[in-house]
Length: 238
Image 1: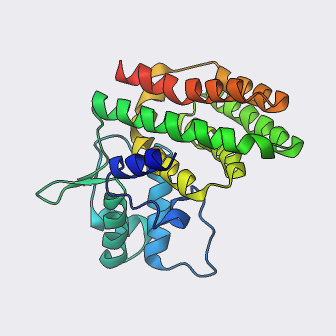
Image 2 (image 1 turned 180 degrees about the vertical axis):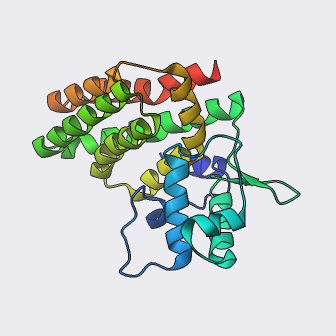
């Protein structure tokens, strides 16, 4: 597994995930008095990951500063940090925007999700107590509500919460940090996918994940997670 992790770390664009694993959490622990830079970074990062910003949308430092009521310096620091993580891209002219992913890039990220998330789920299985399973079921009920409401951003947010709640039980923070970097890079594109599909049925593989956890079925869990994290990306690339 060591060689796989090294290869994955090289693929993710400039993420430096192993050095910043605490910063890569979807809901980082709030400091008593977070700096202006941290506040902008966390807020903008959450918006990108959950698909609140469309693919290819331009951002300006002035606009970011106005949105978060900060000066240009913390806005610039937060944007540069997100560029380094692959959540934003900067052109040679200095234009900053969310990425528009090619089919090849989507396929690459799908492979990363499959490798990382299947391993995280497998490691979480021995620690999947009944309270965790009940929590996953509650989150999945909310996911289903978001589908019925056709709330793409709400769907992405609760879907990632479902996966992260399970993966935290793996107690593999570096691996989870890599996974969240992939989620971050995929956020705008996933929003475009769900907006196009207009799906009305909840994700079937979540039910299979929960059933496999209840049964202690590791092969079934690995298959359900792999199918869940790659299905939508395949439809998008197609």
